[in-house]
Length: 62
Image (cartoon, rainbow, N blue to C red; front, side):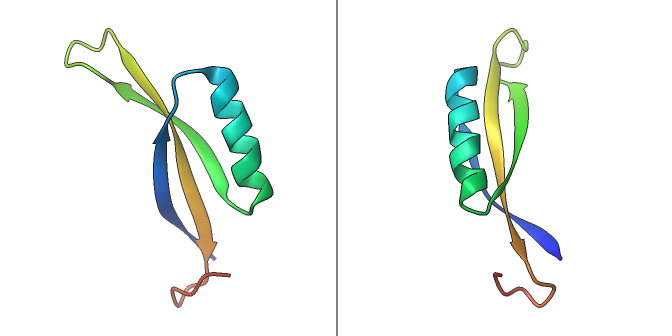
């Protein structure tokens, strides 16, 4: 089995990220945290969720 990235959802508040993660997981998605620099100096960070769906090797959704 392989995973296909289907979305990146930018959410600032930790509590909101936890809620969205629980909802997506309950609907069969694999979710992981991510963060990246919002500005070139890196003083502000953008927190987001990486959303994946499991797919069969031939590319069909399960």
